[in-house]
Image (tube, rainbow, N blue to C red; front, side, top):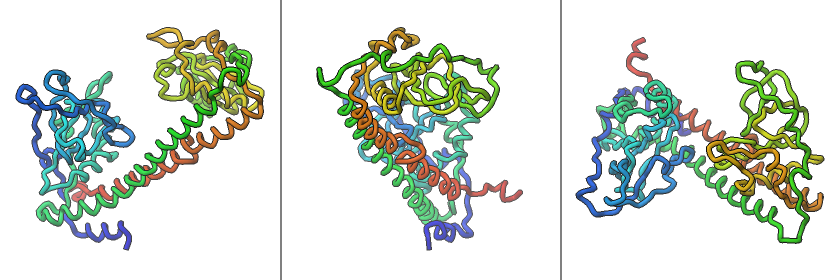
Length: 399
């Protein structure tokens, strides 16, 4: 008997009652800094990863330097949910390491009544599409959307056979066990991906580092043909919808009916905060029929290896010396073409690109490699989570 048929049998004939989260959780307390001299780990709003649902890092604070938002005392097995920009779905389970930490007031602390429900039961339920829809409907504010703790706790969750706590917790534990198996697989793959990315960065930097005198250096203007004059921006209201990708500074921003480029090119961000933040690559290749606006430089190369070599190199170096403007960072054409690039022999470029392409496929491709596998596992988890946690409400049964 597989896990799902076993869970189905376990739920057969079981009454499910829906309760607001507030009824299955306990009240929590805030720290009184004036009454303590102890140091505490502080979980601020950036401490929890949106992707891994884990605490990335904390700072240590005490009464004299604690931020005003450092107020909420947390315990092991508490569930934290960020009420600032709630649809980002930033949440986590507090483990032994952070027992006794202090969390920002930007989190709602969910401490379960242990004789009623499990922390991980809550954790899986607040990851659901139903909860995200609830957040979208109940958050307030446009520039800085937020939701109150009370509203989070108004969300109703299912509790199987609440009149029999022992059986109820056993059923919850079994469903949690099945769902944890999926999240564990995703976590293992994510850890593997992070290791591969570090490995990739190491080899990329090693392959693209040259000693003085080892190779000749050329400016980017000497290595590529600049086609910026052929770019043409179209305001959103005038774009005719189609299947041709319309590119901007950081990638595809729309799809249009016509094209101005047909071939293989390298785009380099011309402006935008990402030039400094580097959250996404500032150089990226495009192929086929495309339209490019005036926020990305368009470069043409003689060969695939030359284009990809420059792409890898630009994404590996600090471009700050070439960027002007603080409020609106800009990499203008003159500065772009003045960037010095090591220029090894064509065969060496081909060798470097072949190695880096393999790493890139493994660590970045959404069609293959680990990112694709992680995406599939996540979808699998979401499917079974929604299936196992979708109980009919009383009004639905009556209807």
